Image 1 (tube, rainbow, N blue to C red):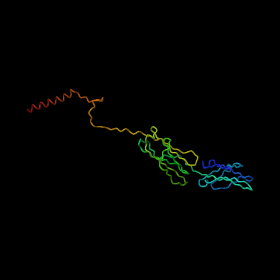
Image 2: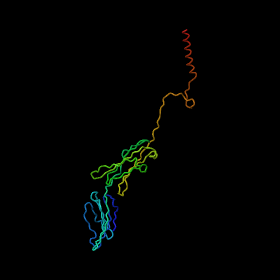
Image 3: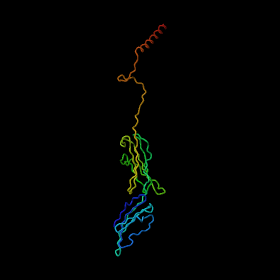
Image 4: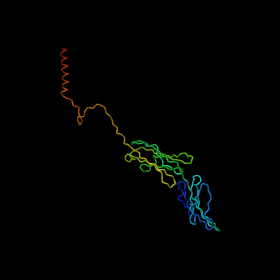
Length: 252
């Protein structure tokens, strides 16, 4: 007896495909269908033989279609031997859209604190979120706690995880930081949903100090110096001397 699922936890457009082996010798009919709430079999896609039984289900629901599916193999009289195997089936509601990054600014400077959050789309089971910086998984000390929302009308929940760190050169690639958030559903073999953004990091502006104090020219430098015409200087000095000379004579 062999039991296999294809795959047991994979849900695509609410259709699940199971392959079951069931062999009961000398009994007619070999296949018998029983109505079960939430389990809808496509009879035209169901085929069973002595070594294999293929059953295709459709219209699955999370409330009624998930659970334990069992395959039985039994012998006829007089032994009536029975063998069976059970496999649990999970019906998942996958997130419809990619996660989103919230709170990201247009640009940052070295030394700034970057604080953002990643929010998944609603699903069941609730999605798991992971942060990546420049394609490397973010260390746990800069990743916040995982917060789950309250279930909505359909019983679906979304998850939010924050990321917070101070920007320095160890996180940058040139003038950018590449942030990526990945959403996965545990136990469901489907491609993860991803959102990524490049963060612009600008260099800190150079501080300019305007010194307005008066300084004497540096005679040792090659900078232009104040040039005073010696003739003009002599004219002023001579005028002052002559003025005071006449005033002293007049007083005498």
